Image (cartoon, rainbow over all chains, first blue to last red; front, side):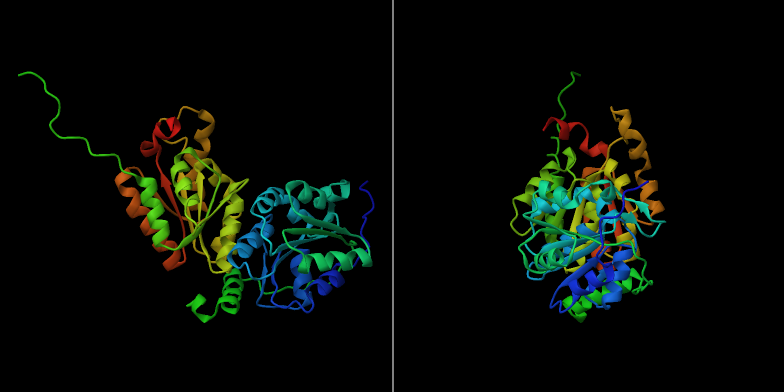
Length: 199
Length: 182
């Protein structure tokens, strides 16, 4: 039997708080639950939703952060998606972008495929992995006060930042953003770079 | 009649890494992301010496596909340098640049393709073109050094002007054993 999930926080409330009054924040989501969470918090052309390419969210965030050093880039992804891209934590630590933060919404399960447990439920600590790789700032949030601190770090602290937010496995209604990747890409570039970027 | 040495002097070897570097510069490529290969060593050095370029070393090649996609969202062009073995690592992640219609340029130095001494390199070397074609990626193979410059130039135009996903492969015929003595 897998261990009981450590998280009690509500993922939808966590992501809504993280993205409220977001200013000029640019957001990259993972696939699955975090994609729906960010859509539920309110669609924006400054959200780039991954519906596939599992394991890529953090690296898409790195590319964006390097290209736009004056903008805060926040990757909102799940534990399963982050585990598939563990090597990217090493690459991001070496590149050390000051404007990049990763929020791992960690329910310790693969939510889209039948709630099979992930490695984080077996004790793997993604914040410790990021710290060992060289991230200057990491955090684990398990309750409201540690969440408030983690949210502040994700939004403001010099990066790269990785914060693990332990959430419950409670089910939520599907809220789907647009899924055509070329549309999402053009919409993002037009909002960020202007009309000539999609000419 | 006695044999004499050939009257025609041998042409100097083509400095194709410098030619690729010039093409990347001319096409405003700023992110050079790679898992290193001996065949790319000189090009990587040239890019590292250029303050206008950001060279990023990856732990695995699919990271580079994702980085290039993210940089394009932010308005910056990139190139992925890798060995043919790394092409296999990128296959699912290529969905990102393919489905989102993101310009993608990669330059692949071949192994397992022409006189290879390491049999472990052969399966992926032989599968490089069919794997990329299965993902609907345009593949330009180069088998002679004097064709590299034009081919990379054409690939860059196709990628960035026509928003395509293009891979240039450089044959072991060109790289030979030279790169491994360097």
